[in-house]
Length: 192
Image (cartoon, one colour):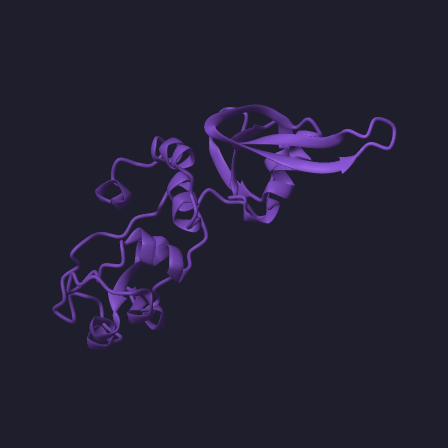
């Protein structure tokens, strides 16, 4: 039963979204008294073992959104820019090709480098857009201007809250409501 629980959204003590954790990690934070406060409308009770003395079963109730006290949220290699991968790129761009405007399933999409890597372009959020395979092949090793292909939307770097939305497929309503308050007004997530 516990394995089917959704991921828990963690925040720092100031309420800034940080990362998703499993229910096991959330229980550890509760057991170590590292939860500063909690919010949201969902809570999950995780049952443990029975006491030999009393016969009572132990449990911890974890909220869907928890703020972690102290340095508990330190992530090795954490940067303010979220990591770039195709899955989150396609979600950022709403699975729409930046050149033809078509909506495609993930298997028909590619990551297009606006300035090709072979010409000094970098693998960064600001240099990539979602493209269908046909448009990516047509553009080839050229810039959009050289290929006479205009971008229908501009790339942008998702903030931490938007990245958390993009990275989790099973977000609870209270978690989504909380995260959307922290998403930039320019985000394409508001168009959804």
